[in-house]
Image 1 (cartoon, rainbow, N blue to C red):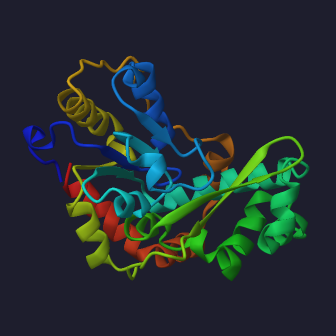
Image 2: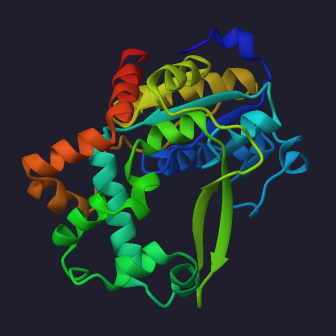
Length: 272
């Protein structure tokens, strides 16, 4: 849903960054282009717990906060990007596998805090990412991360929490308790997407970036140029391996778990 650019002159912008959809690359593109010279920027790494005092003077906000920022700044103009739910599920799983299994000491405090990550770490197939994938898809402890996770960010608020391991900070997201949450269904997701100034998909990344640069340049009266080279989907070797090995049963299971995400992704493609 791309509004006329003249309608958003000097509005605050919020990137509702759904994890594993190419958002980090998008933000890095704007920072490399000089965005920080023109905006008062706030991103998810700035602070553990966010309130109105943190963002009231910020005019460009990005992070995994879902609709939480919209509740703090009701007039903010949001944008987002979605991804093929099968590829995103495999990408999310691959990231979790590589982080939680390859760096146990760095993630120690998170394992102690979250029982499902302990079971993920100690599962008998933890040396085989393909066999462990079935366990992950079927484990109810991972339901929020596996099932319609993109849609959740479009209709629910998220609070960003940090826990610290031995050498690195680790992160976890949870639903904020003090804000009403909407039911995750396609009607609510569609309303959220329709309210946004720009919606894109990772499969149409360059078109999305071109539109976003146009919006940012007009809104903040600047002349930023995308200096990042053209980029295809950045897929890890593990993701490629797992995606190539998916069987029909696993694909059907991912589709069933993400039925609303598929509707949202198809709808997002129709808006481009």
